[in-house]
Image 1 (cartoon, rainbow, N blue to C red):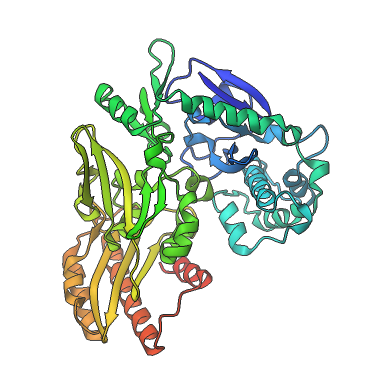
Image 2 (image 1 turned 90 degrees about the vertical axis):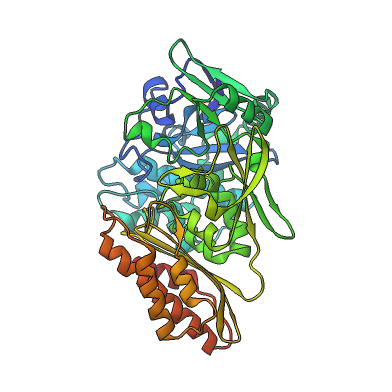
Length: 511
C-alpha cells in the first residue's frame, strides 16, 4: 500500500509491482498524462515532477525529480505535484503564467517538465524567504543554471524560458497559489503519513501474485535481516542508476529493498577527524557542507548531473555502483576517504582505494552493505582540485575526471594523490605519476616525468564519450593544468581560490 498525496488529494494505492515508476503510475493509473516521457533515463527533464516532503517545521519543502526513474513506492508520506495540479481554476501558478506571458513554450513537449522545475524553484525560494514575497531578489546565473540544467528544450527556446524564470517572481503569490498550497491541513497530513511509515519499521509492500515486493526498512538491523532473508532483492536508494536497467534494458526488478528510510544511512555529522556521510544521504544535502569544507568538491556538484538527479542520487550509491565514470569516487580516493561496511559479521572499515576491485566489482561481502563514508578534513595547507571533462556542461557523463590533492612544503610536493575516473575499469589513483611528483618541486621537468608515468598507469578504452588517445591526452593536460595552478599560487605566496565562474568556463571548453 502506498499512502501519499497527489495534487492536494490523499491517495492510497495497492497492488503495484515493485518496479513501477512514478511516470508509469501517473500515465497508467492516475490518468495524469501532462507529464511526458522523453529519454527514459533522467537526462532530458520532460518527465519532471515536484516532490513535497515534511520540512520538520509544519510545512513542506519541494524538490524536482525525474518521474521516469523514480520508484513509485518512494512516494509514501510525500506530496506528488504535477503540471495538472498547479492552477487554481483559471488562475495559473506564477511559473505557468510567466511561461505564457514570456512566450516560453514552443512545441510544448518539454514545457510541463520545465514548468515543474520553475515551480520548485519558486516554491523553494519562497520557503527560504519565509514566504515573504516582497523580499525576493532576482535569481543569480548560478541559481538559474542549477534549477534548469536538467531540462532540455529541444526547440532551443532557452532565452524566453530564462525570462520566465525571472519574471515569475513578480507575480503575487497570494493571488496565484494553487489550492493545495493554501490547505493548511496538507503538511500535517503528509507528515503524519511519513511518521506512520517510519513507525512501522520494515514495511514490505507486497503486490498481487507475481508482482514482486518492495521493502522499506527503517533501521540497519531490519536492513541486514532483509539482506539475509531476501538475498536476491536489489538495493535501491535514489534509483538514478539502478532504474536504467528497467527503462533502458527492459529488465524486471521484481524485489527491491529501499535504503532511504534506514536511520543509520541518513547520518550526516561533523566530527573532529572529518565528515561522516550516511550511504543514503543525497548530494543535495551534501552541497552546503561541501561548500564550507570541500569547495572543489562542491564545484564538481555544479557539473554533477542535474538538480533532479542531485535531489535523489546518493554518494553511497555512486560508490557502491562502482562505475568507472562515477564522479564521486575519484574525489574520495584523492581525499583518502574511509568506507564503513556492515554485514552479518559486524562492522569493518576499509580505505576507499581497497573497495574497487574490477569493473562493477567491489569488496562488499555477501549480505554486506555500505553504511557510511568518512571524509577526513583537509589539514591546513593541503589543497584539493577536481576537474571534469564532458561533452556538455550540465547533466552529462564524464569522459575524464581528475581529482588531485597535495601539500606544498618548502617548495616540494608532499602526500600527492592523483585520482582519475574514465581511465580504467575502476576509479583509480595514478600511482606511477604520484611517485614521480612526491618530494619534488613543481617544475616543468618533474611534471613531464609525471605525464610520462601517467601513460604507463592507465590504458583507457575507447567509447562514445572519448577515444583512448583522447583520454590519455586529456588526463596529461589535467596534470599540466595542475602544475600551472600550483606554480601560480606559489608565486602569489598564497593559493587564490578559483571562482565558480572561472572553473565552469574552463571546463565547458576543455574538450
